[in-house]
Image (cartoon, rainbow, N blue to C red):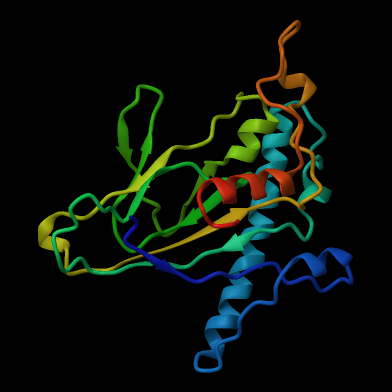
Length: 221
């Protein structure tokens, strides 16, 4: 299993959008009110940054620059502060985060407190990645891979355990998982399908795909 614990900040709908009924309320911690305030500010800041990143991706794909704007407005995005606790016993086969791909469109990673993140490159080699304080690492997620018919590949990544001499230290990370609205269609874009090619994926909505994936990994029945 993964050696981590985390907190979630979800979407705060404040413009009367009926999609609010799809989202549970965020949990407010009375003991640390500033945690809630800072978390929501970080959420909105990264959501805006993600929107600009998707505008750049839309241009790259030959789409209108604002293609994603309405599809991610009040989307089901998540800000997840993660704590990887100190390792006190031999972890055997457990790692801080096993090899996986993210479900969403893109993930924004701001500077982590320690090394450990690795991504799998095209040569099937693990490459260490460090998110420096003034940089953001962006991962492509499964939804964007599906939408682009594999033109943009989902980033396979993991978080490995530190060397034994650093077992006694924690690692903190704050990824922002940018999700669209549940009704966004993930059908492969026509301009990402070659002539006479069959799409690699069947039509599905973002909400249906999310439910499907959550059931596959045991987080939803």
